[in-house]
Image 1 (cartoon, rainbow, N blue to C red):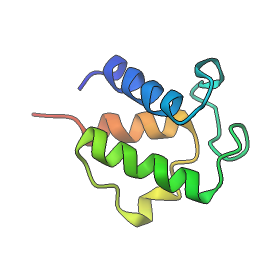
Image 2: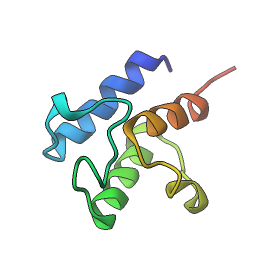
Image 3: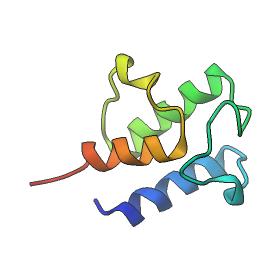
Length: 81
């Protein structure tokens, strides 16, 4: 999957959650900048797992604090040989 596809799909997910698309940059922090609480972030990551057909291990969840980190993680996890 190419970076642009990942970016577009993530934007769609977050906009669907009520996040303003213009607020999404690689440095946007889910809790500090967007005001998402732990339940919102859990919901987001579950939606990502469903939408991208992957499983994010629990030990990885806490590392995904920004929009850019999530995009980078997905780029690595959705590479196909």
